[in-house]
Structures are given as C-alpha cells and as structure tokens.
Length: 256
Image (cartoon, rainbow, N blue to C red; front, side, top):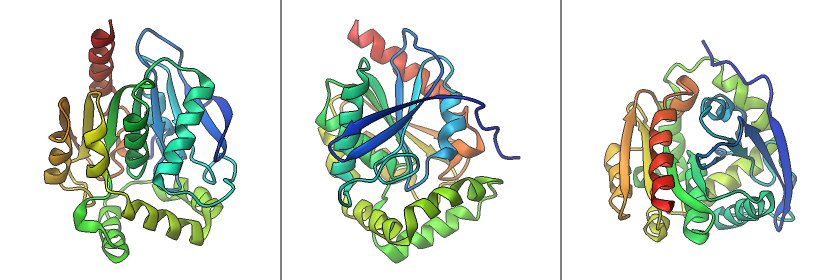
C-alpha cells in the first residue's frame, strides 16, 4: 500500500534571486534543529510522508524554482544556482542552523548549500545520493533508473506524474544533464559539518562503495543502510527519522 499523505501543512513562500520558492512546513518548532529537505528531480510530493514522519522537530520541504509548487526562474538553472535559491529561501525564513537534507538529485543541491553557507547548516543528510559515477551519461542514468523502478512501489508513479507534467520534457532533459555535470564528490569535501549518507540496500542507482566514499571525504561522515530501493522514503517514510534524530542531537550538543 502507498503511504498516507499528510492531511495538512503550512506553506511559506519566499522570493529569491532565481524566482519564488515554496517551502512546506510540517510539525512544530522544538529544541531540535529544523530539518530542511530539497526535492528530488522535478518531484516533491512523494517526500511529504517522510517529512511528516519527523515529528520530533519542524521539517521543511523546499521546491526548486520552476518545479512542483515554486515559481518560474528567469532562466534555466544549474545545480549551483538551485542551491543559491535555497540559500536565499533560508535567509528569508530566518531559521536557526538546520539539518540540510536532500533526496536523490536534491542531495547535490543540499551539498552545495552546506558547503557555501556553513552559518545556516548544522549537519548534512544525503539520502540516495546522485549521480554515481557508473551512471554519468544520459543512457546509463536512464538504464539504472529503469532498473530501480522495477522495485514495487505502489502509488509512486501516480504521485510523480502531475509534477512531471508541470516540468515538461525539455525541463526534465535539462535537469538530467545539469545534474550529470555536477559531481557530488567535488562538493562534499567542502562541507565542514557532520555528514550522514543514507542508502537503500536495493538501490540500483547508487552503489554502496560510492556512498561510503562520500562519507570518507569529510572529517565526520557516517553511512546508514536501510531497506528498499532509491526511493526508500516512499516505501517507509519513517525509516530515516531515528538516524536524523541522532544526527540532530549530536549537532545540538556540538553547538552548545
């Protein structure tokens, strides 16, 4: 069965240098650092159950310019420009240092945010990081995506389709090429806060070897393996809650 979608959330828009950005807010503020998650490639709604599962803090799901519920940018953006928009949104909503998370292609944006603005970020989470070197061409990326999509995930395609339609084929092709050009292992060494990498055991798009290599690029990095494919957060939205809670507790202790 597909996960239950949240019944309600608060929406916070902010104008950025690259367009109007929508953030959806789940839960109530607490002593724990807020969690801010960047959407996957052109899709965002599938992450709402996972955001709602972080009931020990306030969680924010950020849509990138031109995608999902955000406004259009003045021109097409690459990964660093998407990260600039997220930084502007964080400045506008005026949060304390956050747990900066991303899922799939959102990990590349989240990593740029953490590297560029350590004043805004207490720790970083890369869930199902992309793009593994084995998949760095359009044909290979699509091949591994199709292999991963063979894992039964009821309701996921239905969740994605309206957001894929909003993006359109040209934008989807642009996004794929932009993310293929951006290499996560070049950004991660510039992150100066604790790093948590989460990988689904059956993820066909990200190897355990590469995920472990990413954690070795920082002083404080840890890999946690969970059941499921690349979109393990749809399969089990709560599976990341405890690892993130532990990360947030350690970040809070370090800041005190």
